[in-house]
Image (cartoon, rainbow, N blue to C red; front, side, top):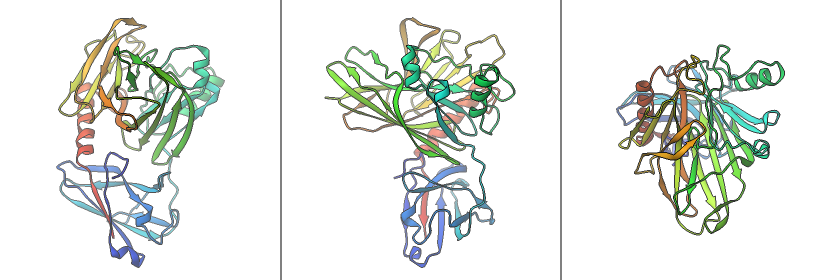
Length: 380
């Protein structure tokens, strides 16, 4: 099984020993799959070294690909419902590829970890921000209305040219309020009194993949105290692929003495307290956030989460308002020591790639359906 939502299965036949390779991608679902990122283990490509071959579709057009830190070749596959597509590997030098998926640590802005793809941009807060005492726990969203990278330009202009990234200069902005909440999809443990044990900012990081098709980072957090467990260390592996609205996130903990409840959630703000939709059947949650300045013509930020391990989706109000937030929509699940808990979260923008809440819910349902009906891959 792969780590991507497709869970592609790689089957190796004796034809691989001849040095010729054909990759067949089969779609047994009733959903057309367009440019979905699929994975092939490099062990299946005997005799071929990444960078020494190209991948061609049935029309002979070259496709971009990337070697991941896990030894996978990833590339975009397009397959009609109930059909299959064949891709040929041929010796040659890959053509240059525009990098639309990338990220970096931003030490000049308090150690932000910022990353993006062609559909959205995100950040997690780092140790320099924690040292200031500012309480910002969750993931942040930067809106985008263009496919090309915007993060580096926004930071440079904001810091060096006085051009605020809190204003839209034609390609989006930072108008999402995180504060002392789970933000756009952070997961956290609950203590025995059902209080959220916020992990605060990451303490260390390692960028594992950095484009052109996938960004992946490992974040490690400082030890937490959860009831009588005093040295609980959280590790997150976050990855974002080209063409996806949602980040795949796997969370694990060391130092736990027993089972706990883990709760991925999305903050609900007082400006739009009832604008969420919980769909337990699909395992999706959606919220229409009116941004930090609802009257400023900033559009709507659509946040969403898919959590297949959770059998309950609910709204949890705060006992009293936290800044401008009134609660979370959440997907609590059981976590056993040593588990790796995986879910997906992300966002879009009404002035970008998703026009309204109905379209956003459809995008989440489509994502969940594709994840539950994986493509299969055969390498010959």
